[in-house]
Amino acid sequence: MDNLLKKYLKGDPILWTMFFALCIISAIEMYSASSTLAYSTENYAGPMLRHVGFLIGGIFIAFFVHLVPYRYIRMAAYIVLFLSVILLIWVLFRGVSENGASRWLVILGIKFQPSEFAKLSLIIVAADLISRIKDSEKDEWKYFRNTLLMTGVICTLILFDNFSTAFILFVVVLIMMFIGRVSLIKLGSLVGILVLGIVFCFTLITTIPKESMPKVFDRAYTWVGRIDRFKTEKKDEKSKYSITDDNLQVQHGRIAIARGGVLGVFPGNSVERDFLPQAYSDFIYAIIVEEMGLLGGILIILLYLVLLFRAGRIATKCATVFPALLVIGLSLMIVIQAFISMSVATSLGPVTGQPLPLISRGGTSILITCIYFGIIFGITRQIREEVQPIEETEPEPEVAELPIVELDSL
Image (cartoon, rainbow, N blue to C red; front, side, top):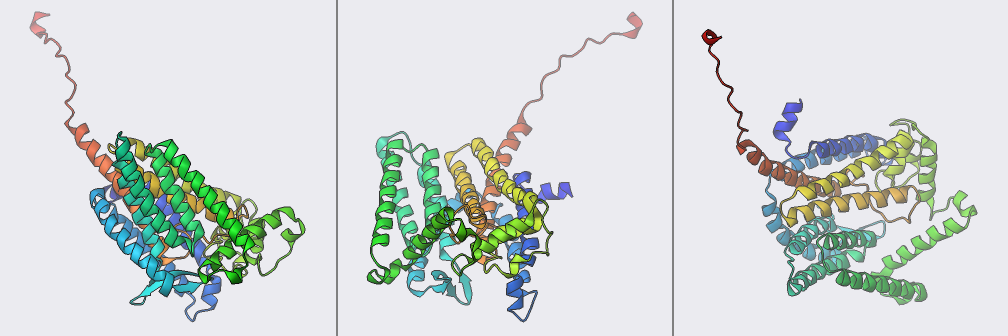
């Protein structure tokens, strides 16, 4: 079995193991967490089969993507980025709204989130542009400006209906620029302008009534409301023990985690899955802790940390800058999103609506995350293939010949 995996699954075996572990955990937990979806449909197994179907499709996508040289992915990313801009503009006017946000498009009966394609393509394009920066000051400004321009356009289009995704994406590109040795003065100025802009917008929203603002800013008032509720709960002890329509998910998420204990109630025995509206999506980590306990929650955290650690190791072995930045950018996108999702489920942060990568329910999210992994696997595959021929052609060390002694002479 081990030889079979090594023959067909190239690249880092530890990352492949982590990838399959997340897929297995996802299938097990979705079977339990999707109970409310199963009750609302005629086919009880429908939601589970749908999720497993996306996981299997994602595995095949990751397999085929890891066989594609990253130079082709580098070129295709610009086309996908251009199409993503068009789709993000389209979703603002003709998007399908769910939970108060228009993030989905339906084309030919296929429902998907354009922001997922935009995230992937922007990280690849940003890695390409940053890798082209040389020592020249003029050269640095040119590619820094282009990277910032495209990041600003994509993040602004995503911002209207998904602030947390836009913020995570911007932070990832910022870290990539820092690793790519962009001038600290430029990065510091950028961060300063961003902080001032956020403070200004927050002040504007808190002082101007919602009725006096254009409809496009409605989501901004939702963000401010979530932050205010989070701050209030931290200060007011009584609010921690009362369940209202506003904090329904947060409170039942806490109850689920409290029920889990150290070992959990074991998969399939969750109670809070029937009370959490987003048990299969944003709050699936709370269900994982309820069923797998503290140990299971720590296991999930370690799996994502392994990805980040291995990505750092892979980046140090890359012969050029582009694949190193690409591995770091993709892994950071997965890990940061995962930790924000887990912090929301454990009440360490305000509700944001970020799914747990590869585990939460979602078609577009699962497939695009599998492409992330496929690209990372492909880079590790190419690194090994570049190193292996060198090792095979190394001359064998010369061994000094021993003198031959005739037996008759003894």
